[in-house]
Structure formats: structure tokens, C-alpha cells
Image 1 (cartoon, rainbow, N blue to C red):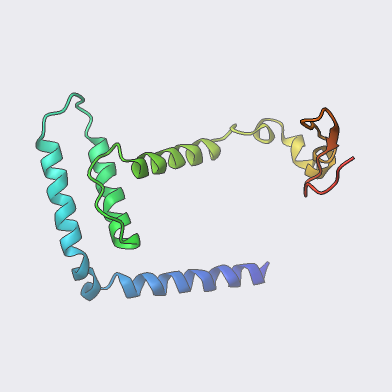
Image 2 (image 1 turned 180 degrees about the vertical axis):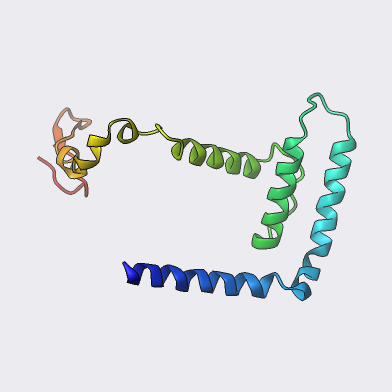
Length: 144
């Protein structure tokens, strides 16, 4: 237990050190041009009349584009309907559904925590394309 906490503390220290090197006052000045360009795109998109009155897509585009430009040197995202923005939104939706209480049967039926995973996975039968039945084990190597 102490070893796990020590490893987590070391990991946290490494991440903090890396973030500190990149986010100092001197290095932040390197990102000023990116932030200015993103702010200009945001203001112009907010001033352009659109069919929907919801502006949250513009802010999501701003955050996504700024982070992607700074961290991954990705080109500026010009639309909130970009495939990268939509992919990130889908991922965030899946994560938020997964962490919701009651999303899994084990949350509803606590006794399921004690059922070993392999006890029922190793007996799943999957029909092959030739009509033969294969036993699908967890590692996928056993075939009957």
C-alpha cells in the first residue's frame, strides 16, 4: 500500500515538474500569438449571426483548438463541427455516462462484485462462420 502511494507521489512530482517547466512566465509568452489568434476567431464567430442562439460550441472550439495547438502543435480548428471537436465531445460523453452511478449492473446488484470474471467468460460460445462452435476464452487461444 505504501509502495503504491510512493509511486503515485513520484508520478505526481514528475508531472508537476514538467508542467512547471512549460507553464512559467517566460514560456507562456511563446503561446501569446496562439491565444490571440484563437480569441480573434472566437470574437468573430460570436459576432456572426447564427441560426442557433447557443454559443457553447464556440467556447468548446476555442478550448479544444487552443489546447491542441499548444500541446500537439495541431493547426487551428475553425469550426465547432470539426471531426476532432466532435470526437472529443463523444469521448467526454462516454466517460461521463460510464462514471454515473447505476451505469453498470454491479452498481445495482452489489453481489456481482464477488462473481469472478473468468468463470462465465470462458464458457461463452461463439458460432464460427462454418457453423462450428468455438469456445471463446479470455485470451482467445482455446478452440474446440
